[in-house]
Amino acid sequence: MRIFSPDELDVMAKAYGRVMDQLSRERPSIEVIRGLVHEIGEAVANGLRDEDALAAAVLRRSRIDALP
Image 1 (tube, rainbow, N blue to C red):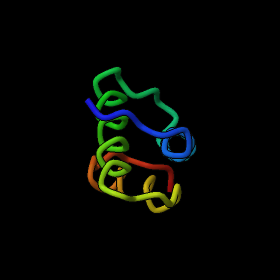
Image 2 (cartoon, rainbow, N blue to C red):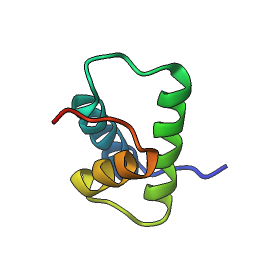
Image 3 (cartoon, helix red, strand yellow):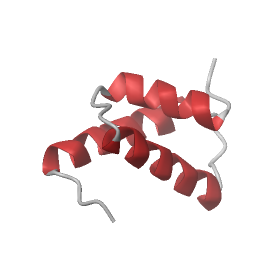
Image 4 (cartoon, one colour):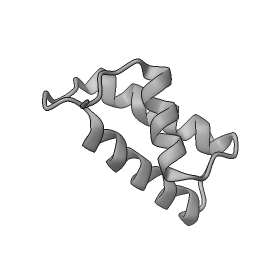
């Protein structure tokens, strides 16, 4: 298991918030949330540090419906 730095955790939290803001009004299931967190963690572990780019990439990879 990888241990993330405080800066990485901050990026992850901001990206998660941006993803949740863009999701449709329906609350996603716990399985969807777990998948989002996993995708965010992997992207940060692979070097992605821009919150907006991270949120967009996670939504795109997860194929989750966002608000128009």
